Length: 152
Image (cartoon, rainbow, N blue to C red):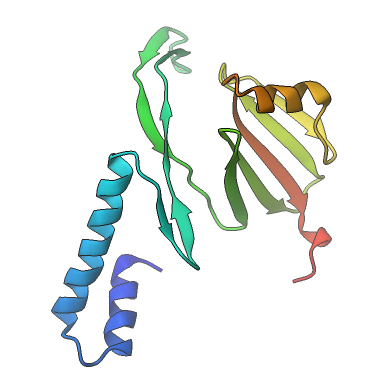
């Protein structure tokens, strides 16, 4: 659903409101969510979801085209999830669960962009310790689960 679909649906469900007023209400709500996220606040819409941003510290990276080193400034980023994904943050590490038709595995993305893939559904003691210590070395964990594990 896109913003215009939401406005249309709300206008249909509330015939006592003018369409332009519904547009203004939805626009105001979205603007307030954006302002809150820009200020580093968390936004929770009960029964729908929660939105938050995370500060990424400045770092040195490599340009994949040229191979040269580049400085990446500190920035705020949000956790984007696509269809069939569920995400949350645990000990400041984003964890994303994803349903796929592949072998079950866990991908660990480190801050130096190294990726470690673990077959199965459990982490080693060392990785668990790394998460709980909040060292900042793990950027993201992605858990891929087979669709066949769930009965939909």
